[in-house]
Length: 230
Image (cartoon, rainbow, N blue to C red; front, side):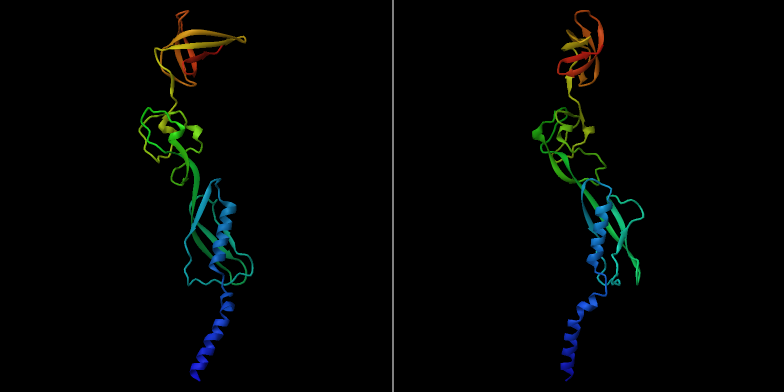
């Protein structure tokens, strides 16, 4: 008889377990509230992943009769944060859920090693998905931003490309012949000259006009070409 009563009690408790569980706020609902809050308030345009510190298994919070609320005291950013989740009705409660928000972007990296002074080609770089939380904005998202630029130091495979490691290539070198162009009153004039210094695109250098022997200032526009503004 005692054994039968124990079996009956066990079955009764099993049958009523869902009703008992319904008294508590599920941890999953708390996690979903946090994720929803992050999605609506995160201050980033990057793709991101959110990692939550699991709540303790034994933590039981009364089931809220209204949707629970999630919020932060300060604007939400990537990195570590603490999300406040609360129930404002009935048996009120509030907890903090630690979260780490990791941003990812497609950034330019090297697929081949690059020597100092070497110009970057398309076969040496590609886009790869990277965690940019520790890059502090020092990365590029477009291959064209660095294409054909010269490395100022040796770089290894997998390096995240940053502009400070590159310079514009020298299109004009000191002592070489250049073509000087001048647009005066809509009439294009071309003259031969000798570069007095090296120059990159857009850089102003001194050039000797071979016809007049005068030293003039001119802007580098292409390989072996400079322009004089009037």
